[in-house]
View 1 (cartoon, rainbow, N blue to C red):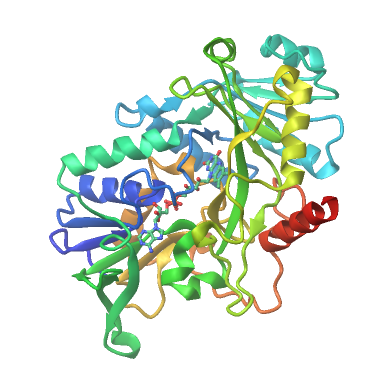
View 2: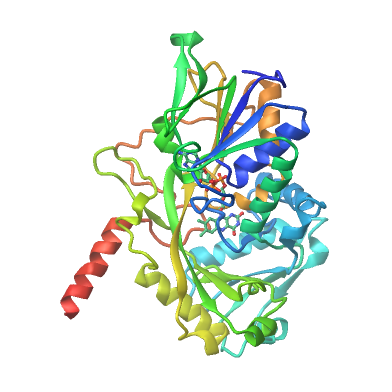
Length: 441
Ligand SMILES: Cc1cc2nc3c(=O)[nH]c(=O)nc-3n(C[C@H](O)[C@H](O)[C@H](O)COP(=O)(O)OP(=O)(O)OC[C@H]3O[C@@H](n4cnc5c(N)ncnc54)[C@H](O)[C@@H]3O)c2cc1C
């Protein structure tokens, strides 16, 4: 392990977490930091945050994450992060047809904030359709059976712009960025020594160039297991669908300032992006994995296969159209554009992993398992790495490296309270689609 601030540090991945680590290390005085990314520019299209927006909200059933989110929200309100944070408020709801799991989750999320001294003044119940219509006067849909609450201490971050802005800030302060499929794509970690003295000496990138480093911090998101297959024992590449409706300028203005609406059994949407006039929608569900039958490891499908371009599973389209019919019916039959599967790093219990990689003499740090709720933490993620380096070990059991037997495991975390449904293999969903298309011909 190094706390020598002049020693070369390599950060792998310039997504939300890698950038945060670079920022905190730089602020702490580390002065030889290089960030590597396979993308040719930042934000990287391979990042789970390559998107218009991500929800920034404090409610978690677990007070540990609630308190972290509160700290992160304070970070979003600083001059550096503030331009990307939009405190529109956040509505959590269930529709009249929600399964009990979603209803229970809603109650527990509310319980986590309603009596909290910071959030209490900002939280109000939405007990019937009328309260939703008063809040969202633009809703012409029936909002059948909707119940929930409004939390004004929350909103969303413009995720692509946040990554772009922090990248520019860091580049201006002397953090080096090595980008692109040849020079930026990391292919190997290099080691010297054996047993207890084995340590990482640097990395190799796709072009074959070797970069020496005293400390390697791996923040590769869904791609982690490509470089560190052992991490696949507890860390899985999983995806959710994203789609958009193209609005006119007037429609965009009409929806300006609406809170984020998250209907736990259907999906969520944000106020439209004023620059592109895109209205982003995400269906909610347990997600899709892409397991290689030989290795048993799920990784994002590079070269798009087996996932078709501009496509999301039919069941997700149904959820989004239902969500729109209930709320904004005038958009319900519009084309869903820029459809994509967005890949993140999931764990079965939804816990992050922030720890040294075993048998590396603390020369490699792994940041992974964002579990689809890690973007909001961007302002503070790097501070967790500083704590780890200063303490010399991960003191929090929940964030320690885990060795899980995945052999018989099909447990992709469906039991986690906020995941409604069952995780599926993306290949099987695509095959089913192909069968249906053929049957129609
Ligand atoms: C559909 C969807 C919705 C989400 N919604 C929310 C939300 O509302 N709120 C929230 O807080 N979180 C949300 N998340 C989760 C959030 O996006 C992630 O937690 C966050 O992006 C994780 O950051 P990361 O840096 O770990 O990974 P990423 O942002 O994915 O970054 C990984 C980086 O590694 C790079 N990389 C990969 N392989 C290599 C390689 N071999 N060499 C070099 N570089 C490489 C990639 O190019 C990328 O830049 C959502 C995720 C998805 C998919």
